[in-house]
Amino acid sequence: MQVLRSILLVISALFPIVDPIGGSPVFLSLTLDYPNKTRKVLARRIAINSFILLMASFTIGSHVLSFFGISLPVVQVGGGLIVMATGWAMLQQKTDNDREAMGQTVSGTAALRDAFYPLTLPLTVGPGSISIAITLGANEPHRLGANLLLTFAALVGSAFIGFTIYLCYAFADRLAVALGPAGMNVILKLSSFLLVCIGVQILWNGVSQLLRSLTQVAGPAILH
Image 1 (cartoon, rainbow, N blue to C red):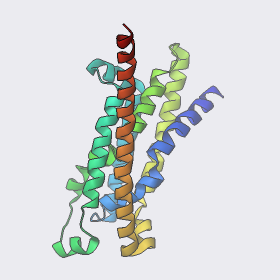
Image 2: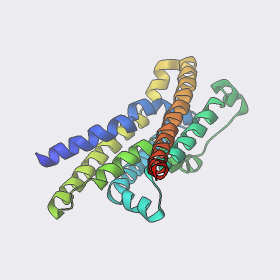
Image 3: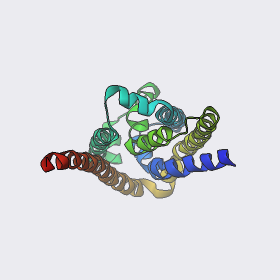
């Protein structure tokens, strides 16, 4: 029962942040020029990358940040800037008709180069997901048995999230068929705008925590 509760905790904490269902239109808008076979290979690669990234964040994330002297708010600021830049670049993309007129083609090799950045990090597993995974890992018990159980729960929970990422991304083309070219263009622009807003929110979360820590340090100094 303890393992089951831990698995449900990992899934309930990470799934709404990763949100593969909401991310599938963004993934589709970035891979409109790819054939379906390449898109499915790319979806599988992103799912595997996401699983590895979540597990690495859970097991060694806090130690890595501590080694480099990086705090979670700084990770949020950097990730927020990247998400904002990606969303802005998507807003500036040409429409489907313009791309077809230019005759753009994308090879499978070129597509896989984007599998980790930006499609896995930060668009699928972003600063929010990483910070939650690091927090869960940092709060794990120090007893060997309990530690192993929680690590197993994180393994199962991350694998479940990776599987849902693959399903949502690999079959995102069904969404394009249902919506049509005009509908997909609306989804593209709306997803791009929401991505910019998400980036601003992530950035603000990091900046607000940094400002809060600054006031906490400055307060005692003023009193002295």
